[in-house]
Length: 297
Image (spheres, one colour):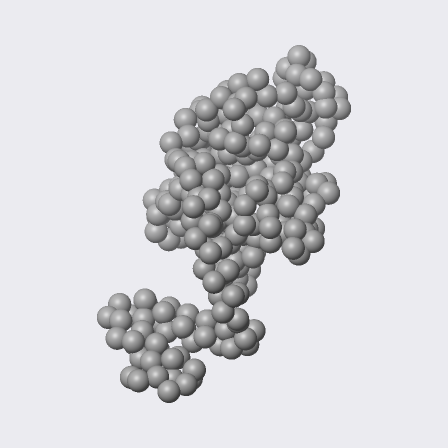
């Protein structure tokens, strides 16, 4: 088609997208071109802004490495990660779900730990935290033999891959649910933390007058054949940023109860006080068990 005006560009691009043999890809690309062109018309994107936008995308790609994923960080900061999660779980976003966004810090091959063990692998000062979890299906039946991949930030707000003072795989571990669907372990209580702001995402937050903080949370990725992989975060409601998560990840179903205890621990008087406990039930949905692509190595 010889282009006569700006409307012809959209028509020609949509016609080309319609030639795609993969039906789902055709649907996605046709819709993408339709809305993308409509967006450009709506904001009347200038040539300078277009060049700036392509430079930003190039910069985000260059900033992504084995230890940092700027693209995932941006998706969360725009609410895209949370939206995709909620639309694809909990009966199409109509009911509560234990699912949450994966985030940019999940790693493959966390070491296996026996139930009752610790995921502390290097000197990590902080308040002791004892976690008990249960995995059930939508009918309430326990899911035995599920693999639980746990990770969280340290009490200084850094994941171990960000912090040279932490041992490799510190505050990470894999557990297996028992016949009642339960698992349990000890760690230190995590804190909320700022997401990395030395790249494109940081410039966006500053331009919008937004803070960079995520509220304190515990990550879990749960795998069991016959079930959709459950990716979850359990948030501390007492965190000062619980209502303003920079990644839009907090839902009512994901707020846990991190109980503070000032008394002596009943099974080990040597444990420092205060110590904390968390008990949370994860609900898995039936589906295909496919692990996500790790955002970092």
